[in-house]
Length: 485
Image (cartoon, rainbow, N blue to C red; front, side, top):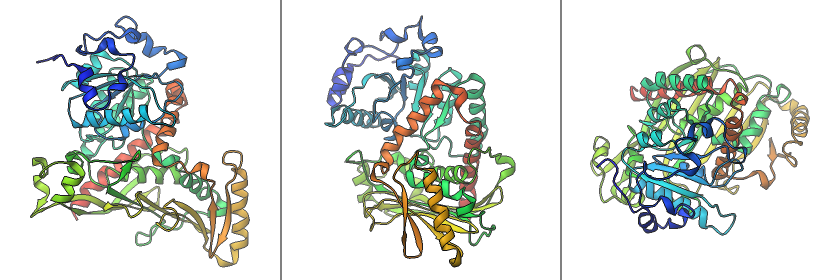
């Protein structure tokens, strides 16, 4: 049946999300096409999208939420975003999990949100969303294989997109990505990738120090066996999000849907390399990047672990190609060596079962001719990432100390209170706690950046879209190389 009537109040109350429907009772029990949309009626929808009201110039449409990052976009209510949010998705566990998180945000004791949802439960979510267009920003997260098609269709419909990584997981989809980004540019729309790691304070300061010749010198000469840049990210399958254990859907383990380690988490690392080494510069993937070698290996998952994290009684049929005996061989670990504009880079992505500290771990090393600038993380330092500078020349430590302090002093207007102290053979960058906001809070920073571009599309840096192509060229070329070794 094409438009099945659903008692949406009863449905949402059974999921613990009934409170999210405040102010939307008139829409309950109606199909997507029947539901009245006073703010986005058929007569005013296009004018509202093209000339938004300043107070609420962004109205979100969440499409097929299948990863908790879709909900984290709404963890805070930011100026410019309407509290009215439309959701189009098939009725199922992905939608229920999304609504449960939003309900938690609305009910929390500290700074609760007040989202009002118009939920459309439909297997034709993309088609009905485009037909209705009850907003101007499409939010996507999860089901990565088919994501680029939804992005392109949304842009063709005149909608901006705010999308979680990865946008593509296969090299054959690079041309579709290129078409989509060209479409966004020609239509003056904003297509933005949720690169949350750019907002981590240690990464920001590392970028500043690497690009200071008095501190860093120049990048160390390329050497494939001893790369100038090494980034490693260790993630964990069992983790806590927004204060609660985070379940994983069975499709999370399907690399044909979710992607491999290099095409998923690797997106963040490759982005940071480009963003750090070549700030505000455009990368041309056709001439600036050479993927040299790559490898991958699995993390074995027992049936008991699979049941614990998914709630499923057994391995699902989609995972049959990855079952070896009584275990799931989850091909989530990967490593790639590549050159970008002559810089020798190694990126590694690891997935283990459970974190000893409840967090993921990030390690980033940039080797210069004068100093090494390193972000490291361990369980012994409150599990927070820390930034340190190591002199390459022992007789230059006094000069290096002065150069680092001079750079930090110039950053005081932006990050007051940062400093440094000598610990053994390094200069440790001291960072006030107010900048230690954590991964989940970084989503608010991404959304703020997106809203700035949405209000003024011409303000988006010219390098953002071509560098997105460069990033996904690197990750999707690395994956097939890793499978061949």
